Amino acid sequence: QVQLVESGGGLVQTGGSLRLSCAASGSIFSISAMGWYRQAPGKQRELVGTIRSGGTTNYADSVKGRFTISRENAKNTVYLQMNSVKPDDTAVYYCYAYITTTGRRSYDYWGQGTQVTVSS
Image (tube, rainbow, N blue to C red; front, side):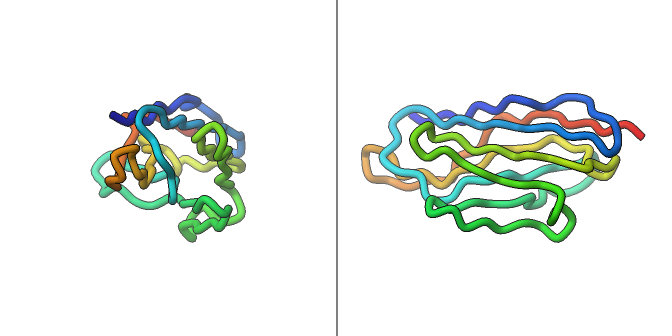
C-alpha cells in the first residue's frame, strides 16, 4: 500500500510565499514523476507542475517564474515553493506521483489535498 501525505498549506497574503511538502511512503519500488495539481472552487483540477526522477521540470504557464518544484529522491518527497502568490492561486493543492510498487505494478497516486488561500 502506498500513501502520499501533504503538509504546508494555509493562509498567505498576496505577494507572500508558502512551501508545500508531500512525502510518499509504503510499498514503493520506484517513483518516476511527482508533481502538483490544484483545484479552485467551481473549476476543474489543473496541472501546476511536475518533476521527473532526473530533475526535469514542467510548469503551467500561470505559475512559471513564481513556483518551483523540487524533490528529494532519497526521502520520496516532493516540494512546491510558491512565491509572489496571487488570489488566483487560491485552491486545494494535490500531490501526485507515478509509483511502481514492490509488486512491480505502476499506478497514479494522489494526496488528500491541502488548502492554500491567498488573501488580497
